[in-house]
Amino acid sequence: MSLGYAEKLSYIEDVGNVGMTEFFDPPHVLQEKIEKLAMMIKQSKHLVVFTGAGISTSCGIPDFRGPKGIWTLQREGKSLPEASLPFHRAMPSITHMALVGLEKAGILKFLVSQNVDGLHFRSGIPREKLAELHGNSFMECCSSCGSEYMRDFEVETIGLKETTRRCSDTQCGGKLKDTVLDWEDALPSKEMNPAEKHCRMADVVLCLGTSLQITPACNLPLKCLRGGGKIVIVNLQKTPKDKNASLVIHGLVDKVIAGVMDLLNMRIPTYVRIDLLQIIITQALSGDKRFINWNLRVASVHGQKSLLPFIKSIEVSFSDKQKYKSAILHDQPFQLKRRTAEAESFEIMLKLNFSEGCGCPCTEINIPFNFKLQVSSESYNVDNDAALDKLRDTAVQHLSCGQNAVIRRKVIFDPRTEVSVYAIVTNVKAFESHSQSNGDIKPRKEMMNAMVTSRKRSNARKRKSSS
Ligand SMILES: [Zn+2]
Ligand SMILES: [Zn+2]
Image (tube, rainbow, N blue to C red; front, side, top):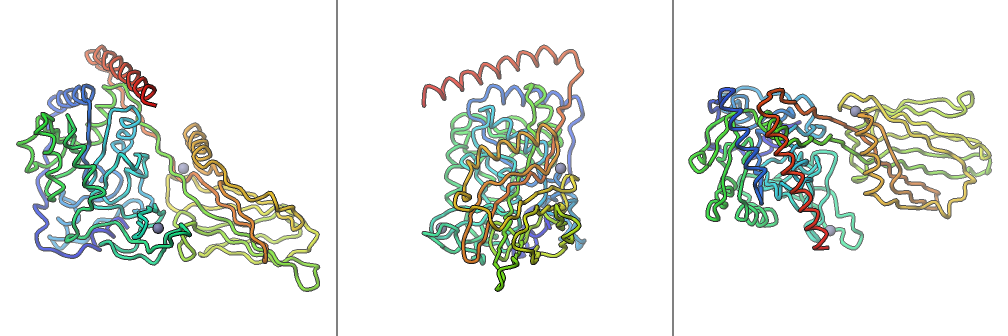
């Protein structure tokens, strides 16, 4: 659950101020501030955004110090809140996706986050433009070659401990470690150095949903001041850095950012989540050569012992319904053993029922089964990025999940084993931009739009000339 992280952290007495009062700017003040922020973002040359737990509360992940925060409740001896979705299925907020939109438009140059929920990375911020200062609950890192592995389950440990898995690179095979810091762990230079560099370069550092209390992370935004940069803070509570900020907005982050996107006339991208699984079919001829004993497995791509957290159950049926009995697999590992006549060919039809998600019930996969199939040319790898983009595009178009494609296939002999890796769309979330009907804002909106477009063009030109 989402509280796994807080529960795993070692207990310390002093977690800073908790249960702090929340402030809300009155509507007209809020609107003025949103307009001012939109203008600052539009005119910025090096925008850096710095985020904290407050941007994930609308995703059902509780913060730490708010009135219903984890530490507030813990200090009051109350039980911790329940998350609406399990942590590993949490979906990004308007704010997460607006940041993706700003990054794609070339406006957001770098994103620094104190959150360990992995939602920035999942939402589509490129890894090289992201510093996750306190780690990522879903990321493991190879202790010998540094390769990173993003999992569909929460990594079991925190505190940079060895997990049970190893690096998939056969040349390496190093031990993997979790990436989430405990209190005593120093911030990793791999995240800290680029974060510091970009904060120093920034002309605007926009702090979203953070009470700016955890050192040394909270001092990063201040780095922009020496070069003449400005700090903007959007948070419901007061922070110790408010005095250093040019603009302090007391409002819900999602509302403020949606307002900014609206003024910039920018769309908030749709979130699409794609998960992987592998289907493994092993076949062996019986002693009298009349039958095939076969075994179907639907498994995680993250290692033999890993579960598939996004699949609840699997219904297996066959194209020849008279001959072959269907089955429902409820328990992991999902596995079905059968024996069929050697000469038979048929289709295995799988209905994979999703566990918690955006409400789409299932996906269907059909697998032709034929023992005599020529296999020599069957192994392949498709261009993953292109295949995934295609899945994403269809999901956005139809606003539904379940689209799938084979992205790798491998055949091994003795016993003959066919391994197919499928990419499946498991979550889609679209965000409506809330439109402003106020006539006063319209002309400004158009002007802003013109400026954003011209900047996009000049960015495109820059990219071209540098390549
Ligand atoms: Zn490695
Ligand atoms: Zn869906």
